[in-house]
Amino acid sequence: MTDIQSLDPADWTDLRALGHRMLDDMFDHMQTLRGGPVWRPMPADVRQEIRRPLPRAPSPAAAVYRDFQRLIQPYATGNPHPRFMGWVHGGGNPVGMLADLLAAGLNANLGGRDHAPIEVERQVIAWSAEMLGFPADASGVLVTGTSIANLIGVLIARSAELGPCVRRDGPGDARLTAYTSAAVHGCLPRAMEMAGLGRESLRMVPCDSQGRIGLDALATLVATDRARGLRPFLLVGTAGSVDIGAVDDLAALATFAATESLWFHVDGAYGATAALAPKLKPLLAGIERADSVAFDFHKWAQVPYDAGCIVVRDAARHLDTFAADAVYLRREERGLAGGGIWPCDLGPDLSRGFRALKVWMTLSVYGADRIGAIIQQTCDLAAVLADRIDREPDLQRLAPVALNIVCFRYIAANGDLDRLNADIVADIQIAGVAAPSTTVIGGVLAIRAAIVNHRTNRADIAILVDAVLQAGGTRAKANESPG
Image (cartoon, rainbow, N blue to C red; front, top):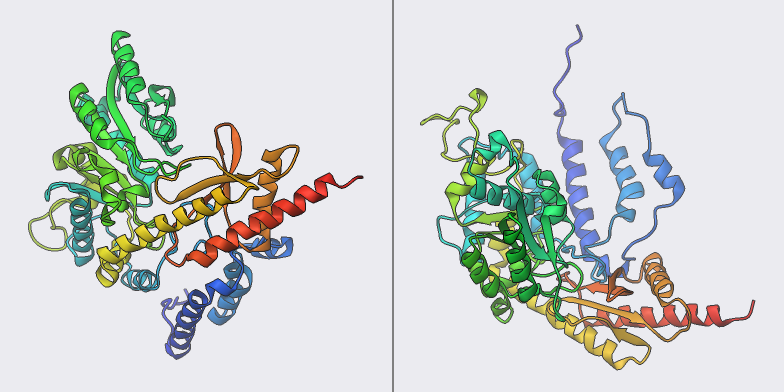
């Protein structure tokens, strides 16, 4: 049998030089983002070239890196660019990038055992609890994103209502019902599905004129369900709705949940970190009374993907929902198998990367106050955008601006305005000028600009609006031309 060598090189010189080059190239990429396109479509030949058979033989690392530069890097999503405004994606940061490199070098599995990376994650959870106003002994775990964090919240609420035996017996005919805003993210209905409760058990409560959950309608729905013999168990508030950034009246929801004996969970995917901005924090009043909060560090906090989080007030409830004994995970008082409660006891994952390091380093290097200032800055820029739209006769704003999302459309044309505005967005994206997205507000298609990136400035706002006006005028003129 032929001996198979380690994957480490016999001589590290060439790989070391390539690694330094990669790092410098990435710094150059970040430094020059503004001068390039936000996004560019992937040509068919490039897409086809990526679709290769499984490589059986080795290739030089430098050659593979050249493929990355040629086939992958130019055609990424573009969210680090200051004029990426289509979805609530953070811009990342250079220190977080370095942290990912360090984490990959350690290659630590944060499922459990007694080692420093888990202490770093515990510290990040403690900082999160402090940010939210939760007690110091609150529990929590880092996950891929708020979609999984919200699922965890639903599962904890289910366990709190039915007891830990639900893990063995299932919910049976408990007829549980949950309540949330009609503007909630689509991951909540999916969480109900994955929890075995069914999306029909989630009541989507109509919103008021500000996009917040209607409190009277909520009370009516809960009372009606109780009268029908159903079992309300969960209320989900929203801190930063996906379409317009609305924040529910969390204090009123907390009081209602306490009165009705409901688990109060907050989907704060991006809005929860507004707690770091002094002027915005009052909007979140009541979040400190939640039973659990899900949010992302990779959005407004600018941590590189992925870095989601859930914080849970009652650590015992959290542990009851996920902890499991297995002989291969046996805990010991001493040695590597020690360390108290392991993260695998707090969520579905046993194999977990060291995503806590990029959060820890981002907060440590920049400081929470600077992150909060960035969050405030994006909201201030959204106000600038809204003001410009309101002054432009060819544009119409379609929703109030609660935080950093502005929804509007081009109206200086006849015919199908929905189709026209969708084409405007696609034109701007393909040109690489900016990357807004679309949504539907009040039954009409809207251009949606979510200002999340720490690199975005006033000039970028002006470029976006000018691009919309130019693309709209060009298309409107073409549509009016005979033939």
